[in-house]
Length: 133
Image (tube, rainbow, N blue to C red; front, side, top):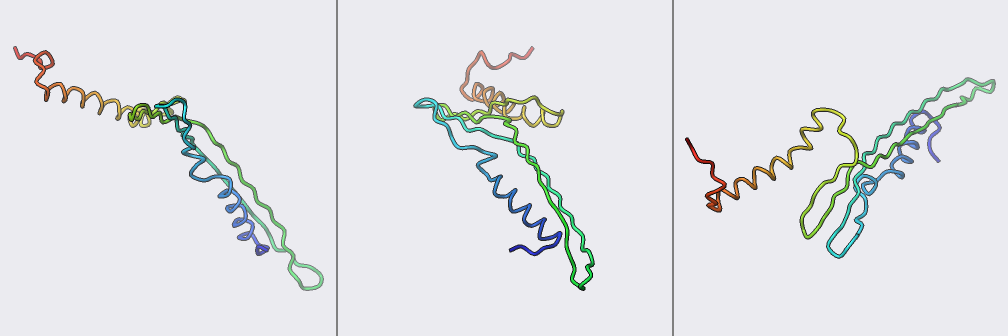
């Protein structure tokens, strides 16, 4: 039995939240859609918890404790990892919240484009090399 105190209530609350949320809540189980297509859901998990209590004196010199605790959890799906023919792509399903997040989300596309241009130059494709004037 947990200690009857504010810290005991908080410990119990945290333990219950931990039971509800684990790694598979954030990065879900792979879903096989076709022979060469696998989808893995990715979610954003936010949670909060609070607890409190107080000791009350009693007539027979024992202390009584009263307290409570609670927690809230929100799980929002935000993207899917799609694995098709060995290629991995990230498909967002929510709007970007701010400029910094949009920039971070653009990085993979920029790297892919730069890599594609570099491959054209390495391959010696004369049409890919811009002419200098």
